[in-house]
Length: 138
Image (cartoon, rainbow, N blue to C red):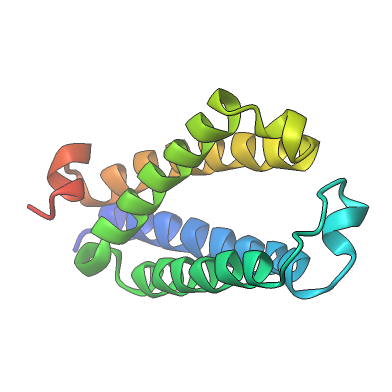
């Protein structure tokens, strides 16, 4: 691997690790009772609705971290993670989550949009492949 490609892969890998670390800190919101309410998000009536998203987010976060360890082998993971981030952003605005959940949802959606775009750009540059090729693992 040439020096330029090494640098692009390293940059993408570092970015994904930072995103995974930030995601991990956001997970604290679901873990500690009362934190959601302090952000303007009403606690669900059952802990199930706090714990299920937490477990799904932990899985997504772990796969993102693992993919950062070998982007060339696991590039499909951050690409699909970006698609899911875009889907959340669309849902957030289309369904008015900002009105029903609070401004925290809107801030999260905007952050997910930015993270998704940066992820796609960095992974494409690292592998020198088009988006669809990576997304379909070709």
